[in-house]
Amino acid sequence: MVRWEPGTRERLYAAALELFATRGYEQTTAAEIAQSIGLSERTFFRHFADKREVLFAGQGEFLGVFLAGVADAPASAGPLELVTASLRAAATMFPDQRRSDVRLRQSVVAANAALGEREQHKMAVVAAALSGALRERGVDEPAATLAARSAITVFSVAVAQWVRPDEQRSMGELLERTTAELVALMTGATTAVSTTETMTAR
Amino acid sequence: MVRWEPGTRERLYAAALELFATRGYEQTTAAEIAQSIGLSERTFFRHFADKREVLFAGQGEFLGVFLAGVADAPASAGPLELVTASLRAAATMFPDQRRSDVRLRQSVVAANAALGEREQHKMAVVAAALSGALRERGVDEPAATLAARSAITVFSVAVAQWVRPDEQRSMGELLERTTAELVALMTGATTAVSTTETMTAR
Image (tube, rainbow over all chains, first blue to last red):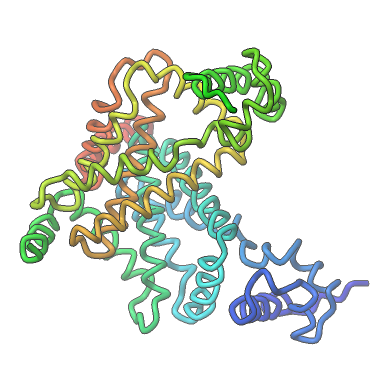
């Protein structure tokens, strides 16, 4: 009988992040991750298919939260409201107590080209599913794809900001600010600022 | 002495697209591509590193055109104008006479998951370089990243439209329309339409 120890998966995740960040992802094996917290390689493979999977586990749930945000939005919501609801739901996956773990994870992913491509692919999958959910809510193409990809752009920029050293603002606040920034950009509201900077630089 | 036959590269490209589209990418070898137009495998490898490279050759020039658009924009241009200039430059790479080749290429890339990921990566590289060019023009973060990624979103959506069967509009026109659609979306201008549709559907 396999005894399922509660918290083992979480401990393996924390141990993997720690080793990936200090020794490097390439230089760390599944056996070393397990051994660093007194577990066997076999235990590791009961929880994760491989060491990469530690960084990309729970992708289905991750996607599900984005889609739940759309599903829970009121029937009257237009495309911008639908993706805003999706982002608001996504923000709940990033409470402040997860910030240091996510920071570590992002630094590991950023340091390895293949992991970076895997992360891009993960977000492209979310964007594709989100645009499908928007179409089901009556949003036409290309608006559905434009809105979904814009939401993913906002999400990626907000996460990158959220994990910066000394950043104190919540993920919810950063998502809201980044959305506002994108809206301002598209309406040309930030053009004046940039023009001034360019002129000063001359 | 290697004799450089003018047009060989272009003929190999056309032959590869044809075979990838009819037989499938996986099922086609470099040797078969060369032989289909009476050339040797050795000749193929003088022009392309491997069969995948046929689909992604010229990536440096591709990126360069996006950046040239920014470089040629007037000093007074804000972030939205800068990326619009970049897209206008990119449109010149898609004259109507290239439409059937690009259509074939897109169908090959869409049919193979690994090629799709490679294409995503290619566009992510363009987005990163474009945001760098915007920062050099005095655009702050996160505006530079938001504007660059939005431009790539617009580009991808416009290309997908451009290669549709029976599509007649030019790439320039589709880029302009898609940009306008994104702006309308972000300002909530299309919300009313979508709400009406949702209400009708109830």
